Length: 295
Ligand code: NAD
Image (cartoon, rainbow, N blue to C red; front, side, top):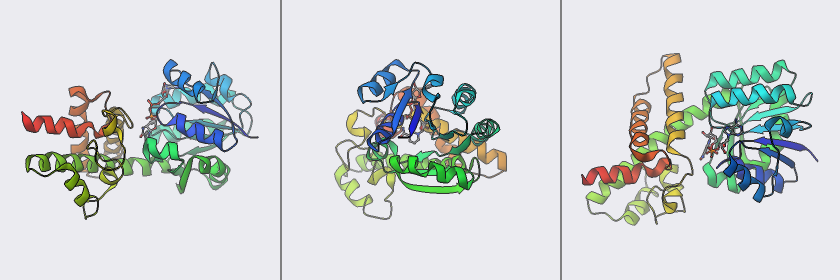
């Protein structure tokens, strides 16, 4: 049985690790947060006391961490401790530079390396239907395939090191913009006297349909179950969306591309996070906007 070390068992990492267990992998976990670590233990993941202990003897190491700085720090610990020839897969969303730095560290130590950020949210993580967008050489991507297939449905090999993160940053710029658009439309519809159910029934089957309304509707009690039905508890936390929009703007500036809506979405999420959105799901833009409409 393949032994997999899983580092970072938060909202996404835990259900992903559980799917590896269900598919017969021997999973050893580490999370530095006490709450996440005990939730993982309760879900059946064998938890270790350090990242180094988790990766020792692992054939594969999966990381699902908040940002590039933490990723670099964790790779600094685990790469020297990993088994010779092991495969490391980073599924976090990070800047392209950090992804490439992580690849370099791993490859210089003789490890196979893949950046494989995901799309599909906590629902997709639990259902094992995530999309993985991967940057790697063909050999490493093929080595990662059985692991990624246990956690996801669509595996896209986007190109060489860092290409997965480039795809992810572009996707999430679309997502941030579309979530704001859907929330603005609900806030406007409220004021125009339209019921939220009617608004959902029309837009989700018309030309305005998109993932932000059809799958992850920001209005509670309407559409499929989403964080809106759980008082906007994340889900996908607003600060993480702000991080991703920042990454898209950083990337756009580095290659001289104008992304005016992406820039505006980043500004809106910065305001939302500063005005109480820190612990909210990114779809919490709806009650925030609706409250402003009533001011
Ligand atoms: P999260 O904050 O719930 O989980 C991150 C986990 O990493 C936490 O449990 C934290 O304790 C742990 N951690 C932090 N530093 C650590 C360290 N040094 N060693 C070990 N563990 C450490 O975040 P999440 O929502 O699970 O997101 C994880 C990544 O996935 C992020 O990069 C995010 O942008 C990306 N992502 C999230 C979603 C989503 O819907 N939540 C969707 C796609 C991608």
